[in-house]
Length: 201
Image (tube, rainbow, N blue to C red; front, side):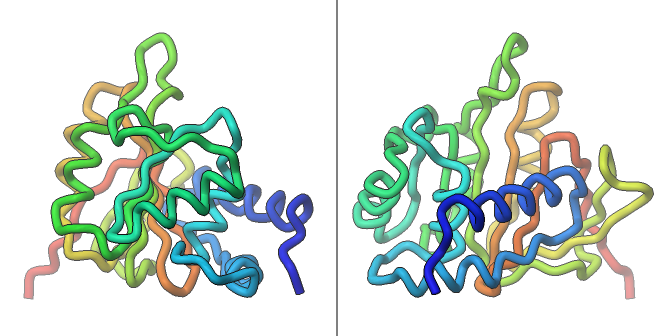
């Protein structure tokens, strides 16, 4: 069965919107990512390509950070007509799991934060990780969260402090999404406050 470009991508978009409106609530993209994988024969991970197909069009700019950057950039450009640019100019920054250590923090530092007149011209960073879950390593508070939500992002990057500094001058800041190998998506808008939940034993 192939991915229905209209119906299925609209469904994925609704899942992304819901996940962004309710930070900490994971969006399950498994079924849709499987359809993308079946289309196959490219270097781009299915979940990342699914998000690009859903969110990108000819008006969007993007940057891929990966050992396979050239091939993945070409695939996304051909399928979505989005324009590849340098990291500091990109609407979306895609950081794959094979990126060098430090790539995420560097991207956070140089990503465009928007302007006071148009804060939504800021970048969204999409990160491929091995796992996201509701394990209590991160405490989430803010709009869309009734009290506290918990989340866990399995990555070797220490990114929470960098994100906090980037988003300190609200409404300027960046949005972030993490998607894992099981096609689970965690969306973290700039309004979400994140603290590391250190358990003392």
